[in-house]
Length: 85
View 1: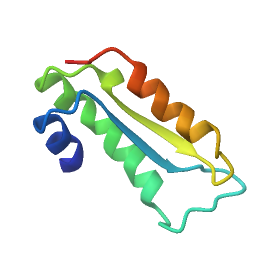
View 2: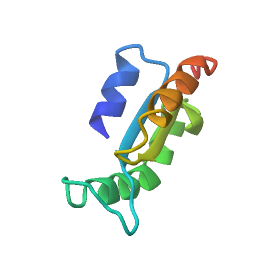
View 3: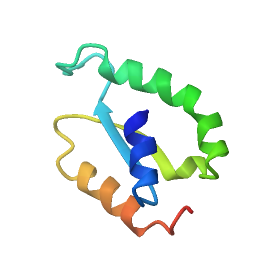
């Protein structure tokens, strides 16, 4: 979560986090990284409110290794979003 806070403090309007897709075809080599990120993000909402940041400004997406078109589209969509601050 310090990366998110550091990003906002350094002038970024929003943060996108991409983690491995869960499910039957789980391919993440970080073992529990995506699961831990989901847990942390669920607790981070209060911190976002404290720094006057909308919850839509920090998003988490699960991305499969085969999502070669979806991943860039997610980034582009975040880029096109109006500034959150």
